[in-house]
Image (cartoon, rainbow, N blue to C red; front, side, top):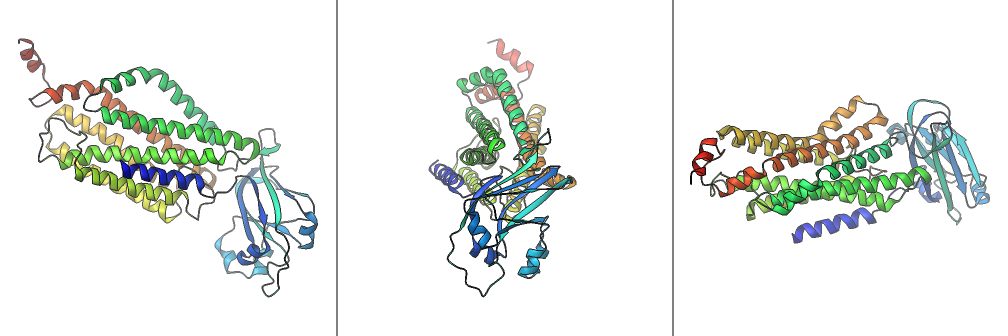
Length: 437
């Protein structure tokens, strides 16, 4: 538990303290040194769609910007070919150039037949003059607003095309959580209060599902504010990612403890109580090891330098994301081999049905992310991130519901099995024989 606590504290600190882009109302400093080093200082990326896309740049010192010949360069789908060009050729390839000589400068984008990503760079007259000495000018403070058109055609929508619709999704998800909570809170409370062999499983499942709900609430609050000012509440976005990571490592710890703990103890204990949470040094080491590896990969994947925006689930374009998916596939194969050995030697139909249902819940939780990433390739660029994000959240929620139904419906079965000295399932003849005494 001490190791788990330290891991969670480390994850929370890294999530909340890590620097991040401010959103689609971007504030910062235009720096001549950075523009020279990068051959154009990278500012942000935004995916425009439809008509009336708008870019607004506000400066605190427009006179200095005019003296430095400051300008914003807009590139449509900027690719690696530009890296091989000279500095002047690179700057000349910009699709649009916005001169910064006023306190507020605007640029309206033409009609976008399909959502298109635009990248923004800053440059001035010193950017390509490598031998020239940059005077000791003060850096330029700026505020950039990037806006898509809303349903009325007015440029007021801060959401980039790949983010549009996520706020409505989190609202519907929270509504579904609330309705399910109202319906099932009483039987779940009774199961938790009653205790029994599966009490720990109920507690971990409840905690993981509650944390997923809290993560959805934080995301909804952040996106609601984001829709108004393009900044949102970055702390709430960080908390959403943190609680989601804690939910994932909790589920992983539970599944590994159930399968590995029972498997490692099969040679010493009878199989009258399958998939019990066996506390042994070996099973605990396997579970904690898996949790630590996934926690490190999640943290690395969330804050990889290749990602400029942060979401709970990524399209996996970096090494950390690929390793994370490989870990999940590997764990799914490990659990599949364990459950196959159990099912192939099990004679009880009731137990086999239980194992099959348990396998469905496990495989859905482990494999939904890798499978959805592969499936997302058939969608357009602006849809892929949403397909993965929405799909993973829904699939993992369904997985938790499957496990809930499984263990709640078998609670009496487990209680009787823990007291019985005969093999299961309990047949009616055995029940009648007991009723005679």
